[in-house]
Amino acid sequence: MDVPEIRYARSGDVSIAYQVVGDGPFDFVWTPGAPSHLDLEWEDPERARFYGALASFSRLIMFDKRGTGLSDRVAGVADLETRMDDIRAVMDAAGSEAAVVCGVSEGGPMALLFAATYPERVRALVNYGSLPRFVRGPGFPWRSPKHEYLASYEEEALVWGTEESAREWLESEGLDASPEAVHERARKDRLLINPGAYAQLGRMNAEIDARPILSTIRVPTVVLHRQEDHIPIEGARWMAEQIPGARFVELPGGPHMPWLGDWESVVAAIREFVEPVCLEDARPYDSVLATVLFTDLVGSTAKAVELGDRGWRELLEQHHARIRAQLSLFRGVELDTAGDGFFARFDGPARAIRCACAIRDSVRELGLEVRAGLHTGECEVVDGKVAGLAVSIGARVAAQASAGEVLVSQTVRDLVAGSGIDFEERGAAQLKGVPGEWQLYAVASVA
Image 1 (cartoon, rainbow, N blue to C red):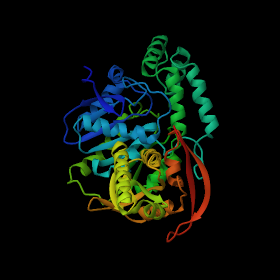
Image 2: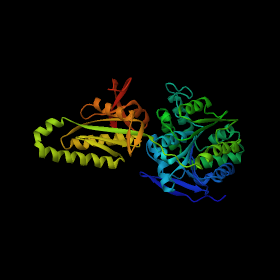
Image 3: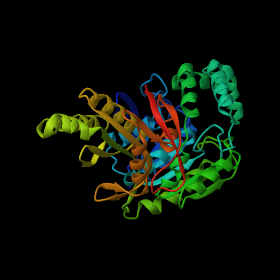
Image 4: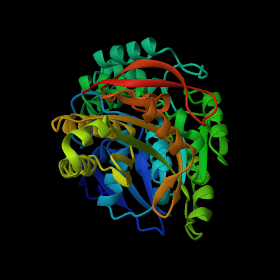
């Protein structure tokens, strides 16, 4: 089969390779799991057959994740928020306003976060052979401990691209492991990703934890999982139970890769779920996952007395201008300004933290100190603004901050794992009007 045209989408300073196949009545974004390579995918008859089946009823949009295939190699470990934003960049480049978003294996959490953050752009969510996190954690016993997971990736990286590694994979999937097949598999592995990037991919995956956002997903969702997949089906079933209204479909047999084994049942399950949803009128959503930021000047009354009305007004104008410049730089949306405080929303917690720190440093040049608080949660959307309990929590977190401090909730800290942002514990706090105790963390450093 001829390879569909490959194009590039710009996501920040990284180029993401993508291609569009088919011209069906709705868009279908395939978020891959293991490293992919858009040129090589179509050389594999099983994969080409599978993708062709998806493209027979949709406009299929495929891409190589950053660091793999034809997309740019990247330095460091990108956080989930950054990788999720690659989906948005690819959809924009492909002219897709809304689509079915399918996350496969390690691509699953990217799709989960995208669906929670941009529900207006997701007609339906499909999660196949995946979990919200890939290492064991409190309340999540279905994977190996983090140190074991990382050790296994490092060991695999040492032999990545060799015939030894290729033979082991082919045999584990029940595929032809003849010398010719092993040689070809090893060649393709070397083109998919290099050993260093493979180890880095493992480090990325070890930091993922999408559990905090599962309950905020409101789009029609189906979780597909094969009974004999090496990824435990119990964890996938648990994940589906946390997503409001999600359907769990247990598929017989194995293996992990959807284009192998009974691939037709995978395609049929996807089509059966998404076609009725996509052929209906899109429904509006009145809630989104958002990160809210509150800032407040410290000692403003004393400063106003010192400067007098005119001097204070001029300084406040500079303060506002600097904050708005940082909001624009980090894609924040100003929602309200009350005196010397700002209220803004972001589509990612790491961007919100970096913006808060930049605001603090910028206004400090004016001789001013701010405190800032952030929280991520499900927010009601009313006339373009956000409201609800998550907003109240954000305001209360800000009230707990000291001068020059950027304080965040545990939800924010959990979602930015792997972003290079470090925190110091501030202990549990009672937030006025909010039930329970809340663990708070101060931003210590931002990479």
